[in-house]
Structures are given as structure tokens and as C-alpha cells.
Image (cartoon, rainbow, N blue to C red):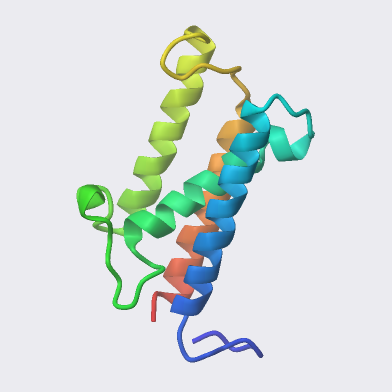
Amino acid sequence: MLDNQYDTGSTVNLWLIAYWVLFSSWVIGAALQMAGFHGGFFTSYLSDLACPPYLYIAFRGLQANPRKPLRATVLFSGTPELTAISIFLVGLLSEIAQLYKPFGLFAGTFDPLDIESYAIGLIMCYGFEKKYGHN
């Protein structure tokens, strides 16, 4: 259990809060980017930071009690390591695709900081799950 004033006896509440905060951040960041708004961090990195950890939580089913991984992601949600590595590799491949085919399936501009953003969010979720678990 978490030893702080917000401990409610279960980390599920924290996973649920993180799930919705990350989802909202991802959508807002993506919407601002697609609208052509130039908002610095909010349009450049917010979605890159929020999407991978959101997917990690969703794939692992950490926001639900009892834990329920998404059925479509069973192959990728078996272990925390498999989930984190799978999500990171998809993000890495999309960035590399932007480097070689900037107008293809993953249109955009290659940015190595995007890769770092993916890693930061995933490492935080992975570490939190390993340390505190689900319940």
C-alpha cells in the first residue's frame, strides 16, 4: 500500500485517476496539434508523454478492480515488461517511419525527444506498478 495521506487502501483509485488524467492530456495535446495551435510543450510533447503511459494502464487493465486487461491486448499485456516494451517499440517504429517517410502512414517530423517522452512515461508506470502493484 502507499504510505501517504491519500491512501484509500487500494492503488486502483490512483491508477483510475492516472488513466483519466493521461487520457485527457493525450486528447487535448493531440487536438491542439491537429488544430494547428502552436503551444510549445502542449502541442509538441504532451501527447507523447501522455499516450504511452495511458496505453500501459489500459493494456494492463490497472484502472479496473479486479484488474481487467483489454481483450484485444492480451498478447501485449501478459507482463509489465512485455507491455512496456511493446508500447515503446511501436512508438519507436512510428518515429523511425517519420524519419524515412515523413508523409506516409505515420506522418510527422522525426524528433528524438518524442522517443525520450515515450520512455519516461512508460518507465514511470512500469516502476509504479512494480513497486506498488494493483491492489
